[in-house]
Length: 304
Image 1: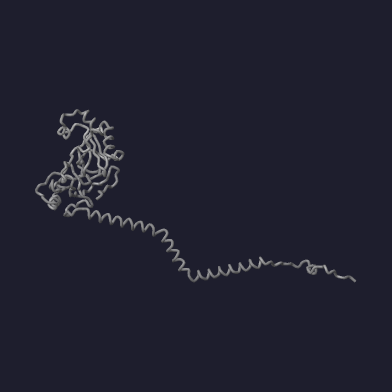
Image 2 (image 1 turned 30 degrees about the vertical axis):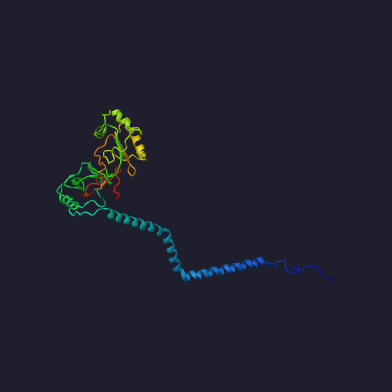
């Protein structure tokens, strides 16, 4: 009689072909997580099915806020700045009669000197008369008025930095006090000198900080060309830059406008009389065919 050993495991009684699956605690946890995740996905799917249109609207609004609203703000800010600038220009422009026959060029004022290009028109004694008589005349394109000069009228002129059109030119800013001096013989020097200075003495005195006279020409002079940015730090810099150029015969400096110098200058204005530094009032007719551009070919507009 054969006795069964107590040490025989229970698994030995199972057929060898029977699969044995051992279920651990970690597998139970993973299955629970899978079920929970599946449940959450199903819930999200049902929520999206019910609120899909709302999601599309929200996403669209977010996209607009990121890609379209900032440029729109910039555009509105630019338009607001342009409007304020236009209003400021309108406020700074003195009132004049409109010219329906040949409209004045908009947003500008011939407030600076037009050296010799506009002639006195004595029959017009007010701003309105000066404007109306120029408007009605085919020979008049530009006009100016100031109490000491009266009415001035003439043909077309260039303004400021404009380089197209005619040779006649007007300053785009009101007359201002300047510093400046001739480095060549000129009547303003010979009239004030106690003895006649030679050409060499005039230049030597003008190029020496101990003997120069920066207040020789306090009114704006013309014919000095474009501003010289590299010499616009001070009157001394401007004088020295002119003196360093053998062809330079005159210079002028203004703190706001900079340094100007050339072989000579003309049409100097201002002798201490306050009226000489007062702005003009003036307009010019818009001329077809003119581009009103600067030396680089870019449109130029007066800053008021």
